[in-house]
Amino acid sequence: MTRTLSENILELLITDFDVERHQATTDTPYEQLDFDSLTLAEIAVKLTSTYDVEVSEDDLHAHGSPARTAALLLSRGVTTEHRPHQQP
Image 1 (cartoon, rainbow, N blue to C red):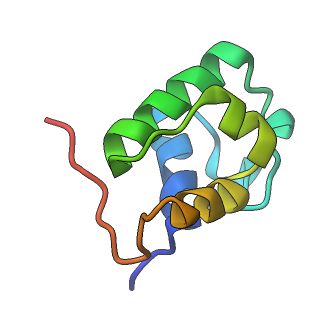
Image 2: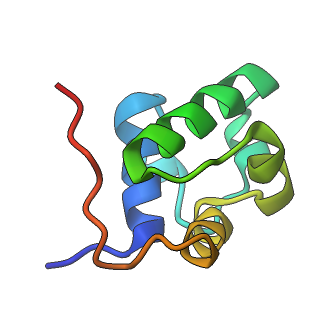
């Protein structure tokens, strides 16, 4: 089964940022996950390196959820078929 971009972003939050799977959906606001500015900056760096597109902390504040962040990435040229880079 192929995951959507928003599902890939949610999976990144679960695996790299200690979000509990039952705690979040693709529509859960970052505020509700208690992410502070430093965490959002770390997520932005991870998204930038994973998808080869610039993402800032301000972008994450403005877009506010994995689904809305996915829409931003799509608008910047990331495709739904884009495979995240695997970090060594």
